[in-house]
Image 1: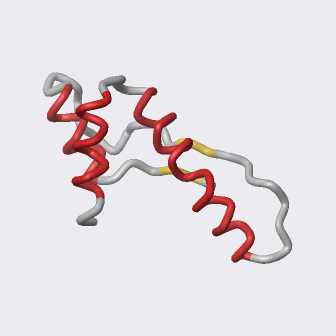
Image 2 (image 1 turned 90 degrees about the vertical axis):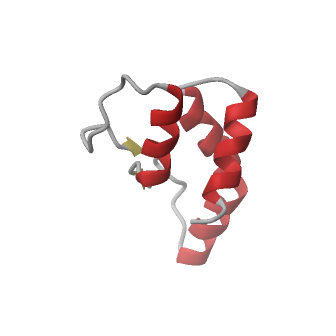
Image 3 (image 1 turned 60 degrees about the vertical axis):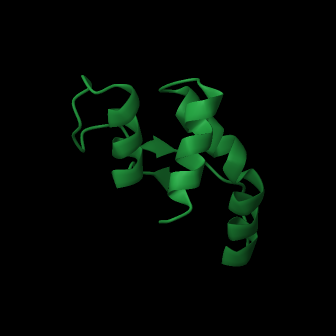
Amino acid sequence: MVIKKKKPFYDWLDSIEPETSKTDDFETEVFLLPDYEEINQMENWIKRNFDVIFQEQLNNWFIDEETREELKYALQSY
């Protein structure tokens, strides 16, 4: 699975670190998933583990529970 940052991430990052350069040059993250026979098995794994992966990605940049909750809310509209 490859995680590529999109506009909501850049908007959030700009709100907490305006001095950080906002380019598409941020590294992508790659996660190896278990070997599944069916796509729906992989999708279910991602759904079950989404919050852990999401929190890990945020922790790579910023740890603030209030800001994190604001981002979660903002992402619901995408």
